[in-house]
Length: 177
Image 1: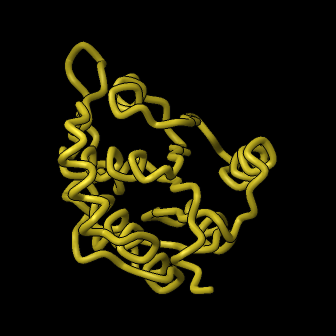
Image 2: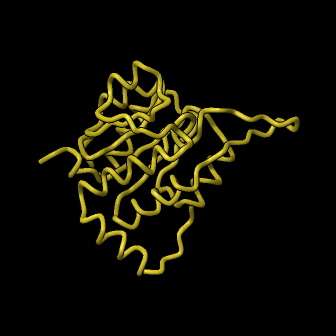
């Protein structure tokens, strides 16, 4: 079986993946991040198809907490130094194998987890070493639809995509972008 056909959990880094990697810090010391609504719709599609989602980020951010809650991301871990350890704990709790996980990361701290999972992606703006060590590099950059591109790739491999989209649209489900 192709590894693209066995994904049950999508795990994402945040900065440089769900965002363009920029950090905006206001004079009130509040951190702001810009998210892409197409990525949000992609995450809603993944949930509709029955896939679980998780965030494992090295930073702590109220903006990420808020966005993850809006998108109903199943598992959110922030301020994580050892992403592999957190992934192993998550997999144990979900009774999943690393081969059933897709991860998207963009920088050096993502390499250990990218090398562990069954399917790995990097956005177009990832550092060269990461792009050299993943299964796929998206055409889009982080914060500009890379997550959506990755999710559509997985859904097209695992499902009848046109039928899935038709069911999604006709289901009249309220979704958050």
